[in-house]
Amino acid sequence: MEACADHTRCLTELQRSVAALGGDADSPRLPEMAALIIQCMTGQWRSFHTPEHIFDVGAGGGPVEVLAALFHDLVYVQVDAGLNINLARYLAAYLHEEANALRIRVKEGTADTEFAMCLSLFGFENGQTLSPFAGQNEFLSAVVAVKALSGLLSFGDLVKITACIEATIPFRGPVAPGQTCSEQLAQRLQRVSVEYDLGFSPDEIDQVVMKAVRTANRDVGNFASPDPADFLSNTWNLIPETNHELAQVNVFTVQGYRNSLQKMEGFLSFLQSATVFRQYQTEPADAQFADMQAHCQKNLEVARIYLRAKLISIGIMEALSLRLGRNTSLAALMGKLPHEGEDKMQLETHLPKVQQPYQARTAQEKLVMGLLENGRSAETQYDVKHSPVANYMVKQMGFEQMMALLEPCRVFFKDPSQDKALLAACDPQVLTGITHALSTLYTLQAQAFA
Image 1 (cartoon, rainbow, N blue to C red):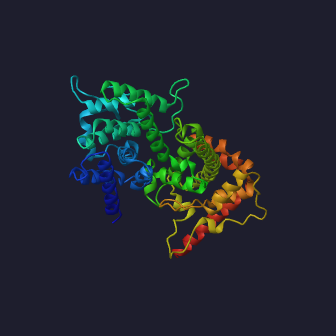
Image 2 (cartoon, rainbow, N blue to C red):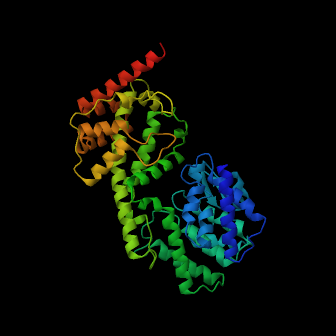
Image 3 (cartoon, helix red, strand yellow):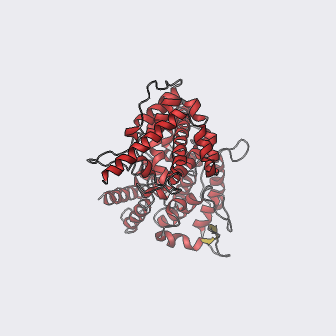
């Protein structure tokens, strides 16, 4: 039912946008196009890059931005574990797979103006090996968009749509001294305009780049969420897209869960807020841009502390789990995720109450403590919203003492034989509380089978 509603909405947006650009909104190709888009966006591993996401990215934009949004995430090789087979007819002629990588390969003498234009706007060339982290998915999505819309729209509009999709390559700093990626895109648009005799004026090129910037900023709009709980909920939807083990609810291992947190903590620790949002000339306005950056910086700071607290708590649980075996499921330690109407036989019920809980010293600590205790803003299928073990540890130890365990955790993650050293570094009272809760939970589970 939901897929049917998404298809209807997608088709409506395709028809409205094509008509606004002077194309044939009644073309029988558009229903097929909508079906392809929704099929790709509802793939098995999609949990963030879904139909809702592409509709959000296009929301409020003009027809070029809406069409770019609908197509910009069709290809997501590392999420979909490869190329969707239904995209092969658009891409097969331009790609060669070797050594688990995709290489651009176009036969010499092949005249393909549309593909050549995509190469120019992305700064790619024939024979280049594509990188999943440097525009591969966006480039291939743009090629699909151009080929799918070819004949329905003018070549100039296809150029504009391609430029908007190029802009969604995320997290780019200066591409050269004193030059942003948006300024680079403007230069490429100028070259394409000359090469294909499009006659774009400087003002028209600036307008296209501003459309591209709006599209790119909406694509990462969750980084500017006023509430860090919302930002972290979006982050939690991203995690299982590249950590497929988490789809096996109540079965995935402690180590598998830890690996997923470790990758996200590493990414957000490396990410600089200055590379998240774009500004080109007056888009967005200075005040709005400053507000976006401020929210982004706050969200990143809170997320880093939050993820490190969770990473440390799962590190302790993983070290304890080795007493049971190397492939212990998280549910075996924490209890299965509760369902409505079921008894909550879970570890958190048996953690001791902290008599003199740590009091937050900064606004960030206060936010993180609230998130650990009360949870993110939305549920996920593979995890509870709140963080009982991390919450217990912070209340008992405080952030400074707990964060001192981060390095011993990293050592243990690299070398599991260091489990005893990690546990020895932990506050004995905290460790006693957790092991007592585990013992109580296992006793109750055993009694349930008696």
